[in-house]
Length: 276
Image 1 (spheres, rainbow, N blue to C red):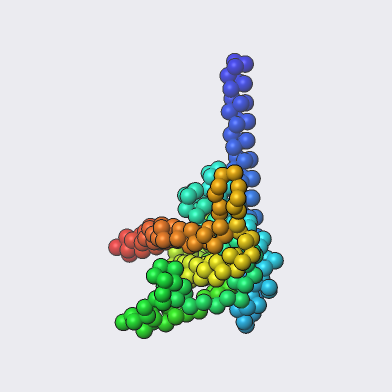
Image 2: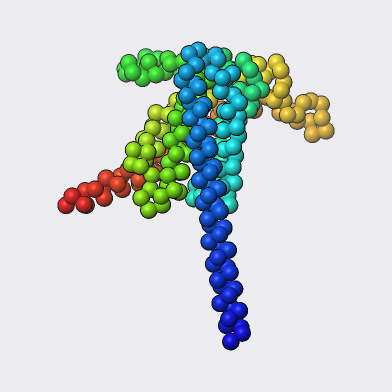
């Protein structure tokens, strides 16, 4: 009987410990998502209030640094199973933004005031010339000619993150009812515009940093001569970073498209069933 009672107590203790740990994780994630949503809202509001794009970094950088760097925790969340996000996709998304902030905006101040024609940037990187803009779609031509800068970057990041962190907050707060329907729609629809805008801005600013990095050598990890007889040139690293978008961005975008189909498509089919 003693063994049985001990087993019962051990089982109860284990269950209580798991419940306590689960509650602690939930409260931590609630606080994390709420704080990040507020921080990104501040970045977004300050970005919109700032008229000239050249002044956006100066106005937003203190909060932007905290909000963007804190995203590193999301990799840990996925790795340790606190959330169900894919570790690789989470790493790719977080890394690209951390790199853009620290290696581009912080290490190359010239990029903070850069305003580039994204189509021209693509042409120079891919073809060594100007991107052909003889598209039959006037809208597409207009988009390709659009200037991208720190302001477009912060708008894309800001809207995306305010919606995303708010979505996760309400999802945790009300597991049964879930986030508000409007928030669900925004979460799985706005990325269709904001992802391309964010990627365009990140790549354009990365391209703008290549010249300054060549002069400052701030990102030269290894310089010749050295024992390994290998050099890691800052501008080359930046070009490698830009080339990673060729496979990384389609991966992220297709993942979001699948999620959109599951969530919004599933909701639509459920409504049809109820009306029958």
